[in-house]
Every structure is written in C-alpha cells, then in structure tokens.
View (cartoon, rainbow, N blue to C red):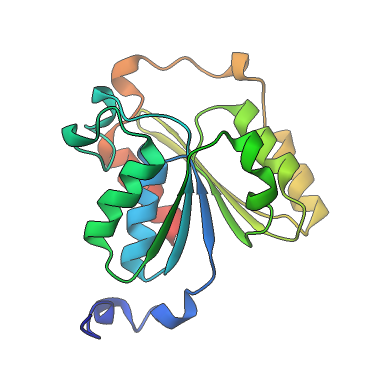
Length: 192
C-alpha cells in the first residue's frame, strides 16, 4: 500500500507505534465503529469478540449492510473492515465472552462495547494481567467512556462502584438505543 495512507495524522500519532494487539468485545454500534476508527488511525491488529448475528435493526447505526443480515457480527465486521483497512489484521471470535476470557486476558488493551453490566462484570473478572480497559456506553444522546488501568487497584475499585445490576439500567425506548451520531462520538473518544 502507498505510504501516504496515514500521513494526514502522522504528526499526532505514528502508525508504527500502534502495533499492540487490541481486543474489542462487542461488534455492535460502539464496537463496529470503534474497530473502523482504530484501523483508520493505524492500529494493525484487532480481534473482535461477538457471538450475536446481524439483524436488520443493526444496519442503520452499525458498520453493516443489508447483505450482512443473518451473519455472525464478528465475521461480518471482519469482512467489512477487510475492504476498508488494507493494512490491518482483523481476527473474528464468535463465542460468548465467558468462553473467550482466557484469550482476552492476554491483551494489554481491551475495549468493552457490550450492552449489559453482567457481560462487563465477566470481562472485568477475566482480566488477569495489568491492562487498560476502555468501556464505552451510550443510549440516546448520552455517552460515557471509562478508562481503567487494571494494575491500579484504586482505579479498579472506583470503576467497580459504577457497575450496577442490569435491572437498574434506565430503560431506553427502542428508537433511541443506537443514535448514529452518538455512536460516532463514542468511537472517536475511545480511539483517542
């Protein structure tokens, strides 16, 4: 590929600094756009974890097209990004989080793009090595991005205080769950 691929941002970050493998858990709205954004930044090694399939409701706010409906999200994202990111290795893992915790624990950067607290607790419990956890959340126009250095016990304890039971989540009407411009903002913050 032409060496100019990342030249418009090379004064801010050099792609050769972005060799570290990154795990993205969840290939929905936040996860799919974050993967694209990281790849466009120059990250060269992304592993996408998601067991779900693409449905028609996913097409409006996620990277997918109607051709992906019925396909496993991780595999569909691997294919879509393969067209858009010529110098990035995209690996798809289609099992449940609980089945992938051992592999996930080997990544130094783990991005959580899951849509429930139980999954987030599973991710947190499965990370054993000092790592960076980035947790993106959104609903309607509201966004949150949490960054936790898992080798800092105080940061972990503070972060755990913000984890609540799934039942305590504020119900969001279906038509507000994945607003596309909000998703782009979250993906940009995570990438930054």
